[in-house]
Amino acid sequence: MTAEKKIFSAAGEKEVTRAIVGEFAREFMEYVDSDVVIVGGGPSGLMAGRELCRANKRVLLIERNNYLGGGFWIGGYLMNKITVRTPADKEMDELGIPHSEISPGLHVADGPHACSKMIASACDAGLKIVNMTSFDDVVLRSDGSSEGSRVAGVVINWTPIEALPREISCVDPIAVESKLVIDATGHDACVVRKLEERGVMSTPGFGAMWVERSEDLIVEHTGEAYPGLIVCGMAVSTTFGVPRMGPTFGAMLLSGKRAAEVALEKLG
Ligand code: 48H
Image 1 (cartoon, helix red, strand yellow):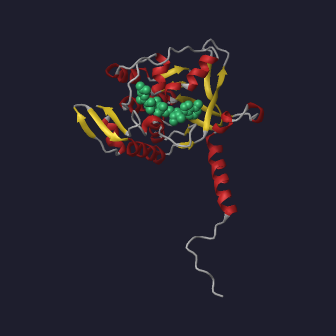
Image 2 (cartoon, rainbow, N blue to C red):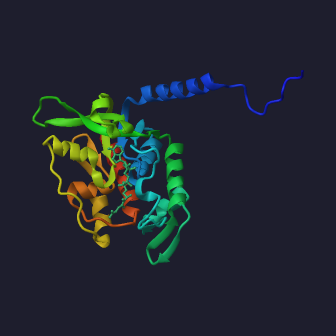
Image 3 (cartoon, rainbow, N blue to C red):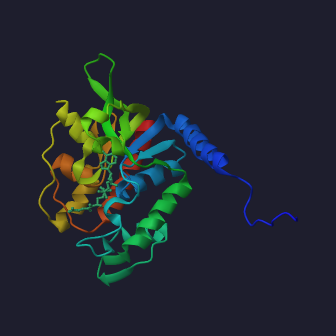
């Protein structure tokens, strides 16, 4: 009997499993001590990650969902068009996102196209991403000086753990150390909220909508909110009480970029 001619290689089940487990573990080991950990893979987090990786920093992005992009896929009202106001159209040009100017200074693009270009660009730059992983707590360190504590990493767990009943989910989280953490978790501002829960910060929550004011303020307030912790995107709004801006994303792109600049200044 002649050997059956196969289209695919002979790799079987065990090789597939070894490839997944081995490569995940190998990469994860490298990133348990990162320059920057970004929590949240929406537009601001992806933009910050892309910029930091382009500056050769070791950056790990943690995302609780099995997809990336946050609110960037669908602009508003379940319609998958997103808008950006000038000058953020330049960022879309750089990311290769097609867009058109609908009225002076207001640009429209397709959410899925914009989002996938942004994800690809961040990955191309070298951003390492772990999905289905939720931020649980901060690593806080104090050197005993009057400056108090600083954020030195994040405590994380598999997202499905949260959904399990308490009596069957006694799974301790693990921690990743980093020189800086960026809170890019959108409206929830999970990292900032955790510091609030611990009594070391207080936040006003995001303000009512006012597009014309909001975007400038978001970019201006992007920066270190607590030693070791930088906030960007909608988390800035929640942290500082800045008005929200609805489904227009220019400030998310510029805030992500600004967060990376602040991080690079701090990393030296
Ligand atoms: C891991 C987490 C956790 C957690 C959340 O909401 P996002 O898109 O955030 P931004 O700030 O990059 O962009 C905001 C924009 O999408 C938006 O909603 C705007 C402009 N709204 C204006 C308005 O007026 O409402 O993405 C945040 C990401 C998501 O992917 C979450 O799943 C993730 O963070 N995330 N990841 N651990 N605890 N919490």
